[in-house]
Amino acid sequence: MIRVSGNCTSSALYFDTTERRFAAISWWIDQFIARWHAESYLSQKLHFRGFLWQRESINEYDDELVKRTNAYIRTKGFLSLWLPYYASYGTTNWKDFNFDVAAYHTNYYGNTMYDYQWVNAVSYSASYYNTGIQMIYGKGPIYNGTHHLDHFNLGLPEYQGYMKHSFIVYQFPNQTMKTIYSENIVDYIRIYMFIKGLYTKIPYPNMVY
Image (cartoon, rainbow, N blue to C red; front, top):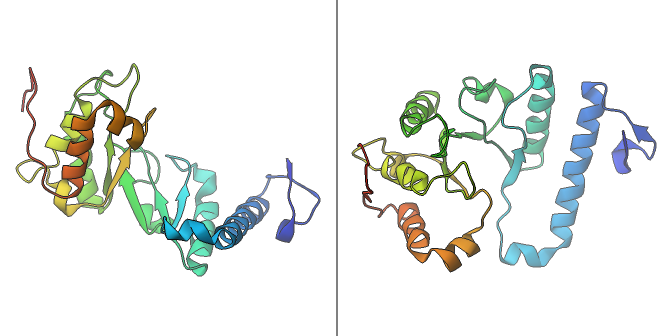
């Protein structure tokens, strides 16, 4: 339970129905858009295109809520993006939820049971279902030192080809572009080259492809 104002009224709002949950979400969207327009200096540096659905998987009881939310976003002149985990609920019929674009997470980190072949599998699925790919470069115990190179290498034309032919979302868990620039300028340049479509394969010890 939270207290909100505007079109949700100032009374306590419970999220026990889709209608009430949609009222809260649409109110928040309106508040964000109003704040964005009020802070005009932001548009000098940023181009706001739309909203991200926060959950990587859609609960079955959220079907109608997601559809209504995305339709509402579109009436405001913005786009909706979803970043699902590979094979989570809704990934094969993401267009039915009124998303403008979706990009699959590869589920590949380097230090888990899933190897680089998951990048290949997700790429095939993304191509079939017309989604984008998430490029992952993270820090922490589940990330090894070459997982980002696998994401880059496998995007080349001789492999999956998503470097030049896919919608790509870049994710940097537990770090930022600024820290990458400060701590690992070589990888920063590799990211830049990949974005520009100029990246070339980087081998590393024991690489098997």
